[in-house]
Length: 206
Image (cartoon, rainbow, N blue to C red; front, top):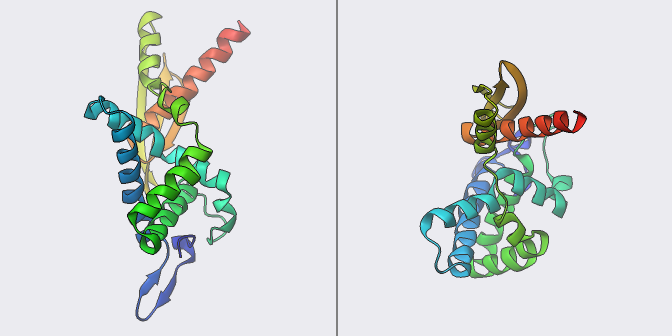
């Protein structure tokens, strides 16, 4: 059930619609709690703000999608062909955690997630040191170089009927990057990252 996407749902007269969405909801909560507990103990002197930022880095959608693919879960997801939802792989990973919690309980699930998955497949320390504020970097660049940086955002729905945001960043009226994510903030960060890459390429060519 954890690897059954909503596009491949079946219906049971007793259990209703069968797919991984409820397990995804549960797994999302479990993963957040496990990572929060891990960081709380790893950094006993850190206040709430930095801990929240670090947790976000470890459980962001792009990270979960990549982790799911690294583990090979994407090869076993049951879904209709042609579905291109950005979150499918990460959703399946969260659903798997939800199923694991129901079967093993919190403590065993925490041990498996930390030791067998996160600490094995991720460089935790390197991730926590990442500076992800690409929008801030781009705005600072614009200010220093007398450039007008402007964002345009649009909301739409993907094939799985999930709400997404598309952000386009313009520098002096020229589209220099685009990002798509579940929140405007993350979409703008992706667009800013791509714009910075394009600026770097231009500077290298110059």
